[in-house]
Length: 75
Image: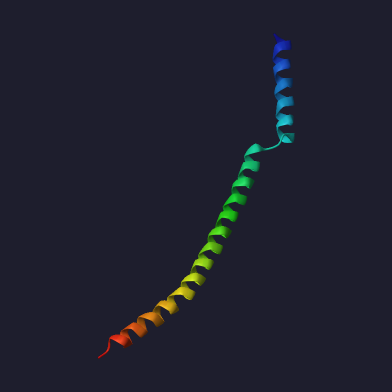
């Protein structure tokens, strides 16, 4: 019986020591998720910036057309 207890304790200690040297898969997944999150935020920022530029380019053109149509309607 003593041999079984000692064997279990030795196996436990060996597994405990090995757990520190194994790759942490959760840490790898967290790193990947952080990378994807940052990439997504950068893409969103760039798209919003491009949309803002396009809106600024299109709105003044619409304002000029609206102003000229209002001037043409005056009696």
